[in-house]
Structure formats: C-alpha cells, structure tokens
Image (cartoon, rainbow, N blue to C red; front, side, top):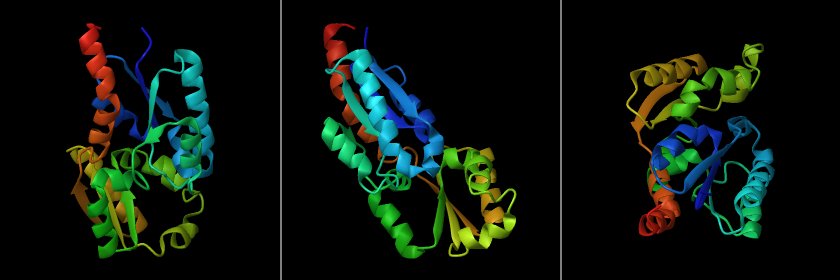
Length: 208
C-alpha cells in the first residue's frame, strides 16, 4: 500500500525522524544527503527533486511534509515549497526548532558568538566540520573560521555520555567554552505529529 504521508527531511535528522514516525501506519521518511548541511545553496533543488520523485512514485494525493527549516537557503527553499504547495517545519535552522524559538533567541542574546552542535553534528564533527572546512589539512585556518566564536553549545536530543564527550572534545578542538542544553526533539516532535495525524486517523478508521 502506498504511503499517505511522506516526510522529506535533512539527512542530519534521519535518526530523529525515524524515531518519531516508527510504527505509524502510512508514513514514510525520505532523507536528502546530510552533506548539503554544508552546501545550503543546493538544498532547494534537492528537495524539489525529492518532491517530484515522491509524486511520480505515489501520486499527487500523497501528503508531503518537509522536515527542513530554511537552513541557510535564503528563502529559495520556501519559494520551491510555495510553488509545490508543501509545508515545512518553521524556523531558520535545526538549532532553532530543537531549542525552541524563544530559548534559541535567548541563547543568541547571551552570546552572539555561539557555535552549535546537535547529536548528529557531534557524531559528524570530524567529517563535516573539520574535514568539510579543510581544517584537517589546514589547521592554520581555524582562527579565520572560528575567531569570532566564544562558546560551543551542544543541543542534546538524547542522554548519551559518549556524545557529550564528543561535543566537549569539539569545543576543546575549537578553543571554545562548552555548554550542554538538553532539548530532546524540541519543536520537531509536534511538527511531525501535526503532519502525520491525518494519515494515522485515516489508517485507523480504515483498518489499515
């Protein structure tokens, strides 16, 4: 049976999206390459391609929800979604919807020079940040990239001492002070619940 809802999300949210939709009837998760986190100009095109492929595979009646914030696309993602009639989670980036808009704004007010990690980025710090920015071969560039930062805030989705240690090590590597804030899934959880609720209701009513 084809899905009733397809969630198209950033690969950096794959674990969280799968956890939030596990066992829900009629819901599928399709993720876009997480490496686009470092190439935001390509996100809108990649999401547009996923939307087209989803409709080609499952028909125009399938409900599509995009689990991306703006994520540095400068409004180009919203332009695609408006054209396609698809909604996304609200917010400028995952840090905002994990922490919550008010809490994120407060963090920024406390210290504008804050670098953020999530569970995903704590795991992938070496690959996406150090190698992605070329700091593994050109460590002398570290002040150019991070000279304006003062602290690293780890927005933790889970209680995982190993990830906390990774985040602390990342802060040490960048020469930043370290803070950990437990956010859980933040605003991602209710956004997914609202997106898939009609599918769950239909499936239960239909005995699927």
